[in-house]
Structures are given as C-alpha cells and as structure tokens.
Image 1: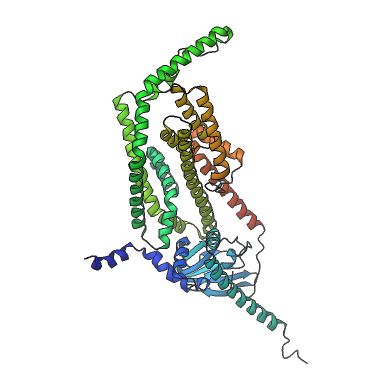
Image 2 (image 1 turned 30 degrees about the horizontal axis):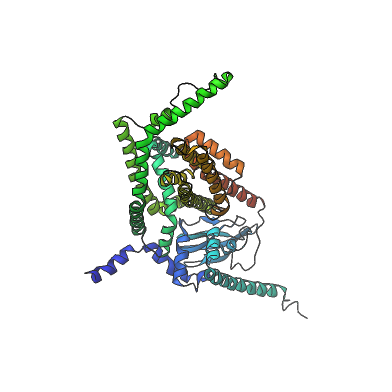
Length: 173
Length: 348
C-alpha cells in the first residue's frame, strides 16, 4: 500500500515549477557545473516574468541591477546609434544576459529586446551577492564561468582590434 | 477604468478595516516563518505541503511549551487575579496615608495633590471587564485573532510569491528591474527586522524572567513574558516592563523601596546586555534609521495607531527610507548615463 502510493505522494508534494527550474539553470553557461543541491538553492531566488514581442527588457544606459535568463522565447541584444540599429546577438532558452550588473555598477552597455513571446527569469544583484557570500562553492563556480565568458569576449575583442589595424592588400607595399 | 478599480479596492479596504490588525499580525508571522519556507523551496517542495508541515511543527512546539510552561504561567496569573482586590486595597491605603501625610506637612502642596484616593483601584480594577458580556466579547476577539492570524499567515506564506509574479507581469518592462530591487531590499529589511525583534524579545523575556526570579520578585514567568512582548515597542517597551515589575513590588507586602531599586537595576542591566550583546546578533544591521528618525517614527506611530503604531513604526519608516534611497540612486545613475561600450558583446 505504502510502496504503491509513496512515489505518487512524493511527486504530488514536489513543486513542478521549481523542480523544472533547477535542471534548466544547469544548462545555462553561467551556472554550468553547479551541483543539483546548489542549483536548488539558486532556483527559488529568481523572479519570473512574461514578455511580449518588441518589449524592451532594458535600454542601453539603464542602471543594471539584475541578471536575466531566457526561459522561453528569444531576446535580441542590440545597439542603437545615429546610423541605425545593430543586432549584436540573439539569445534563446538557457542563455543569460545582463551578467555585468552582477559584477559592477556601470549602466547597461546595450539594449535587450524581446523578439518572440517569452518568459525570463530575473535574479536581483543583492540576492546573488547574498548567495555568493553564503556559499563559497557557488561563488567559485559562477565566477569561473563568468571569467571564461569574459576571456572569450577579450579574445574576440583582440581579434577585432587586430583585423581593424591590419593593412589591407591594396595598401601593402 | 483604473480609477473605478482603485475606488473599488479602497472601498473594500474600508469595509474590511476590522481585519487590518489580524492581517498585519499575519504578515508579521509570515515574515517570521519565511526562512523555513525559503529552505523548503530549495528542496522544490510544494508550498501547500511545506506550510502545512511547518504548522504541524509549530503546533507541536506550542503544545510542548504549553505543557512545560503553561501550568506555571496559569498559576501565577490566577494567584495575581485572586489577590488583586486585596493588594490594591492595601496599596491604596498606603498611598492615601502618604498623600495625607504630605498634605499635612506641606499645606502649600495640598492643592497640587490629587484627590479622591483609590488610585490603584481606578488604575487596575476599573479597567478590567466586569460585565460578563464584555468578558465574552474580549474572549471572542482573542479566539478570532488566534484563528485568523495563522489562517491569513498560511495564505501569505503559500501564495505571496504568486502575488509578486502577478504584480511583476502587470508592470511595464522598464520598471521591472527597479521594482524587483525595491521589493527585494524592503522585503529583506522588514523580514530581518521582524525576526530580529522577535528573537530579541525572546532573549529579553528569558533574561527578565530569570533575573526577576533571582531577585525574588513574585510572578517572574508572567512578568518575563510581558517584558518579552513589550520589548517589541522601541524605547517605551523596557520602561513598561520595568514599570509593571515595580507595580507588582508596590502591591506586594514586605518588598518596600529596596525591591523597587532591585527591579530598576535589573532592567538597566538587561537593557545594557540587550543593547551590547543581544541586539547586534538579532536586529543588527537590519535597519539603518537615524536615532532621531527612529524616535520620530515611534511618536508618530503612537499618535496614529497607539501601541500597534509604535510596533509597526520602525518597519514603515524603513520602507519609506529604503524606497526613497533606491529611487534617488536610480535617478543618479540615469543622470550620469554613460554606458561602457564593449565591442564583441558577449556580455551586457
């Protein structure tokens, strides 16, 4: 009797949303490598919000206070200048953006716009800080992932700078 | 349309104003129990199950505490109530004699001295409900509170995250980050303050009960419990509990002035221990109110809602201060809108 019903009761006692959120976060590059127990501590700290296509998550220059993770849909990272709009990246489920708000207090460096109807998870900076202060393992893993992302960014920047400085074939002696 | 909805909500709030106090107390209880539910969230346990389990644990603890401390508290309260008429008569006789003596030795003061006698009688006994209907009304209110507060707290604990998600989905996207920031900061500050105040009250109540028992004051459990609850009121709470203990001394034959001095010294020591050793670990840095603002908020709270106003004054002042700080910070960042421009943009 108990053996028969216990798994069903345990399944009923589980919060489906939170149970789904932890494995989802494990796939996000920023949280890759975190054990399930720590992902369980991270997951309830996120707020969830539904967005409609065309809605701006944040503008370039806005104060950055949170990290966003795409749960469903797509988000475009764009820069708007006098010349027009420049699409930098399109993000899908599992991708995170706004990471630099967790590290420094500078305003946002680009605009994030929702491309397809979707849901985003929002992690407020103070919650993230509290979690990092309370758990060295989370701090170490997230910082390592963030460093990797920054290293990729730094390499890409140097390649861009190099190609911009290299003289073209026509100019070469 | 928005105005009609707002007017409808305000009308409902006005009609249900009698429920405001239990709702406020339920919110405080929810803040107190919140960390336990946050912990069960990390295990992905459904909130209904988690809150129900928590209630079972609390009821068990209360039953055990009632079994251990209840008889002592009940005996002290019964003895005090039984002896109150005799004690007040004796105290009144003593006070009358003192006033008469003072009037005779200094006739100039006679006009300034209050007349009528029966000071304690009027102060204590006349306030107690004498009519059985009134007594039933008080008991009914107490019973209703005992049911309503945990009832509302259950739903606060179970559904608050859903209400926040609902509110977030209604917000325009450009306000989401600031709203989340404001909500998180306020929620954290209020939660830490309420949990800190309750822990502090427990510590002060225990210290007072032990101290009063050690210096030989009657009814130490009852007075200790009162000191713990009164400690929730900033500034006035310690004075009220010391006053109550001093009143018991006045009403107890054979204690005299030395007893009052012992009580005053005991509460001074408790206050110093509380301020220097207990509060840094309980309330600590949960609120960052300037002492003048703290005192001002307590005075305003007292004018607006009496004792309840004094209790909620500090959290309300903290909410106003933190909201103003975050909004000013937001404006300051917007004013120096100079984002770093990063080529490549793997990160934003």
